[in-house]
Structure formats: C-alpha cells, structure tokens
Image (tube, rainbow over all chains, first blue to last red; front, side):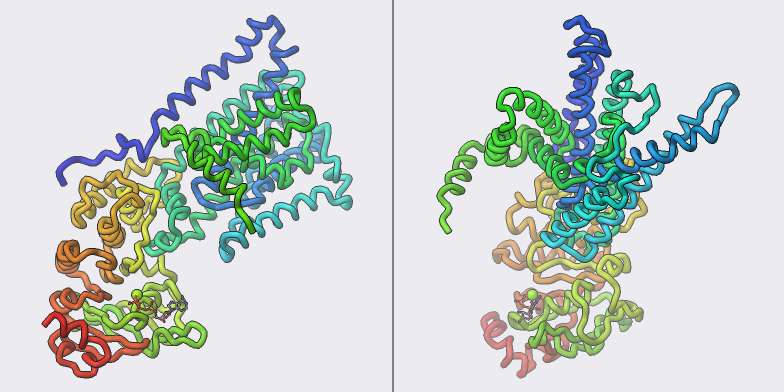
Length: 370
Length: 256
Ligand SMILES: Nc1ncnc2c1ncn2[C@@H]1O[C@H](COP(=O)(O)OP(=O)(O)OP(=O)(O)O)[C@@H](O)[C@H]1O
Ligand SMILES: [Mg+2]
C-alpha cells in the first residue's frame, strides 16, 4: 500500500460537474418566471409568462418520470415496458381519491388546530400517502415478475402487466369511478394548488420536486445499496456469488423507481386536474425511454436533459411541421441514437463523438440484406 | 493440516439431459488443505464447482459444509457461510472500476448493504480492505481502470481479488491460470499459495497445469467422465497407472 486511495477524488466514481451544472440551472429556473415577467411585461399569472411556466412544469414532472426510468433501466439494468403503470397509478390514485373521497370527507369532517382548518392539508397528506402506497405495491408487483423471468420474456411480461392496468382504467364497468376512456376530469384540487389560478405555486413545487428527486436519486445510486443495484446490472451471477441476493436488490430498484414515478404521476394529475388512460399507456413508457436514451442512460442528468428536449421539440416541431412532427422527430431520434449511442450526456462525458461509427451504422443498416 | 472435513460431497450427481456430467461423486475436503481436482476437458470439474457453489441444482446427492447440509442453499447464502469461488471464464463487473469490483465484494458481508442514503465511498473500511486485496493480487496502480479495459492476465487477478475480498474460508479456484501465458503463471501461483496459507484457508483448485498442481497441492482428486478416478497425494497420483493411462501420461510425462 503505497498511497492512500481516495475514490472521492476520482472521476470514475463521482462527477462533481453534475452538481455544479444543476445548481446553475436551478438558479436560472427560479429566476425564469420573473425574468420573463420583466422582459415581456406580462404579469406572472398571464400571457406568455404563464404559458411558459406551464411548459416548464410539464418538463419538470416528465424529468422525474424519466429519471425514475433511468434508475430502473440505466442503473438497475432492468428494461420494463410497464413503467407507466407507476406514473399512471400515481395519477389515478390521486385523481380518484380527490374526486370521489376528499369532497365527501371534507363536507363531513372538519379538523381544526386552534382556529385554523387543516382538513384540506390532512386530506392532501393522506392522498399522497395513498399514492406512495400504491406506487410501492406496483413496484412490488413488477419485481415479483422479475424473480423468474429474464430478458425478453421479462420485458414482455412488464408490457402485459402495464397493458392490463391500462385496460382496467379504460374498462366501462368502472365508468362511474374512472371515467373509462375519457378518464377523470375536473379533479378538485385545493385553490392554492390550482394550476390556472396559482400557476407560479405549481411551477415552484414541480421545480423543487425535480431538484429534490434528482438529489435523492443521485444519492441513492452512490449508496452502498445503489452500488449493488448497479452490480446487478453488470453481472448478476457474480453478484450472487459474492453474497448478494439479486431479487432483494431488484425489488429495491423497482420499488424506489416506482415511488418517484408515482409521485410524478400524482403531480401531473394536479397539473392537469385530471387523470387519463394515456398516462398509464405504453406510449408514456416509451416517452420515458426516449427521454432517457436521448439524454444518456445511467446518468440521471441525461433524462432531465432528454425531458427538456422532448418538451421543446414537441412545442416547436408542432408549429414547424404540423401534424407530421412525430415523423420528423422519429428521424431525428434515429440519427441521435446512431451518432450519439450514449446519449447527449453520455457522449459529453466520454468526450468523443461517434460520427464515423454513426455513418457505418447507417450504411450497415441500409445495406443489410435478408 | 488437520483431519477435520470442511466440505463434503456425498453421491453427488448432475445430469444434463442424458449426459451425466457429474456421476456419483464422493469427495471430502479436509480443512487447511490445498485440494486439487484434475481431469481432462469435459471431466465435469466446473460442473462439480457449480454444484458446490450452488449455481446449479443437484440431480442427486448432498453437499455438506462443516457438517451442515447446504444442498439446497442458494449461492449468496453459501457465500455468507464462507464459500468463495472464482471462475474459469472471467466473470467480473466489466463497466466498473477495479476498486469498485473488489469493494462490492468487500461490502457484501458487512452490515451496510441496506443503507440507501449514505455514500458508499464513505465506508472507509471496505475501501481499506479492497486496497489490501488489490495489493495482494498485484493490481496496485490499476484501481481506477475499468475492469473491461484490463489485459487478460490482470482480469484473472481481478477474478481472484473479487473472491478474496469476500474473505472466504473455503476457496474454489476454477483454473485460475486459464488463458495466461507461462510467464504470468508463477506470479499467480505465488498469490494463490500466499492467500491460502496466510489465513489458514482451505482451497479446492481445478487446474490443467500439472507442474503447478504437483507443487502446491496436498491432495489430488482425478476426475474422468464425471467420476472420481483416483485420489491421493501428488506423489501417489503421479505413480498411479490408471491415472497415467486416462490422463496424466502425456501431460506429466512431458514434464519429467
Ligand atoms: N449447462 C450445461 N448444459 C449442458 N451440458 C453441460 C453444461 N455444463 C457443462 N456441460 C457438459 O458437461 C460436461 C462437463 O463439463 P465441465 O465444464 O464440467 O467440464 P470441465 O471438467 O470443467 O472441463 P474443462 O477442463 O474443459 O473446463 C461436458 O460434456 C459439458 O459439455
Ligand atoms: Mg471447467
């Protein structure tokens, strides 16, 4: 032993740049509504200033959803096509309880602390606990399927499970509860959380939510448990042979990822004051997948970037290309995957552009004969 | 060397369809010995290791560790009992650093595996342990290399390091020198000898290099076609006619 090993100083193990970048962005994002307000002269809760807050809110929520997917796929090496079940599950749990249970409860009970009515706060806390519980259950459900199945079989089963939930919320049998195809609309949220009247509040809540989720996930992937989850991605056999039970660590990955997704879903439901089948559909999972791949798998900051790009693109591409924008986006996505196989953040970290191989991949793909 | 048995296989069999890879094997490993298992390709040595380490379910028979029946215990529980294993085909965590490969193994038996919100690198005891192991297997200076970037010889050392970091009482080496050039072998043999003797551990060594087997083992078991053909001291095995006919003849003959 000649020198003292300090892994904290090594670039393979931690990435200090991430923290600095994210802090700069946090400051910029906090300032954003006010800067918009100064520049455009429109009030904080009106016009373009309000509109762009809305765009950002969706971005913040989607970023958390994408990060939760990255936690599962990028760090745990678990490819699930049913991840939207957690997001939609959170959204539906929130919407169902707020719509069918909360109003009743609030008209029948009044919980006071001194002269302050805290019924609403209690209800919100309860509903979020329920969201947490459902997310944990969905996480457990999915991890239970991974005990015996591997690879493509497992991926197929997650797709089937996700679809089952999708069909369940669309079932006409429960129309009076779930709204079936149309979903739940006009979910009553407390006035201070109302996205039309108090958009700035939701803006800051979502921003803080994203920031906190990032910090927590970053911490998790560098924790003793997180490192074992990564080991599970790398080599399950060896992990088992050195004394770790893969099932336990996969379950932790599933459940924690599901919690983040579920909370994001609940917040999304507040933002939309609704819950709809799309939120639980495979399309939603694919979106998380695209955002993660775009930004960089296994980077956490990548999915945030991916979510920002998706949000921007869906905004501008629609005005530029009209209804055909997904086609343009599709082509762009393929090019990105070809040229930046590690995503934007992944490529940035490797400091290496893969242009040459990108061309090879494309020509290889085009010239492949059956 | 004591007479106490640490690991025992009783009537152990493993069949893959019609192929009986391990056929009614009885073997006793005595504590603090270096017990070699040799045999031609396909003799069933790796399969036997898979049964002993719990990677595969047995078809028949029992495995006892310190007198306790562990036949149906999963690998991770056997690891906690003190059984370590290295692989014939390098089996590492390719995209993690050398240090992390070994640190993970060092962490496995600790009490910190379920700390979800503390920093792994703050647990200095695992890092110290890893540095010690890295030093032992001769990978100092390579701590922050990605495992997949190591040359083959160093991957084999890492393979051993991962097993050692678990601090097992019984070490199963499956052809530790596989694919290494002859110049690299002596160093590895010394490492193996050192780690086994140092902490009075027990080792089962599967190896094709006869010079190595003859010089470092206390007991040799010869396998052929899934069965135990002979067992004895290196001297006895070298003299055994049956063994010479089945296997040793050409290999050992060259050396003497
Ligand atoms: N998973 C498996 N499925 C089917 N057959 C297997 C499997 N593993 C091993 N075998 C067969 O069992 C026999 C014994 O193989 P094993 O790998 O145990 O031999 P070995 O003694 O380790 O050989 P080597 O010296 O080449 O490593 C071989 O015929 C092999 O083809
Ligand atoms: Mg073998």
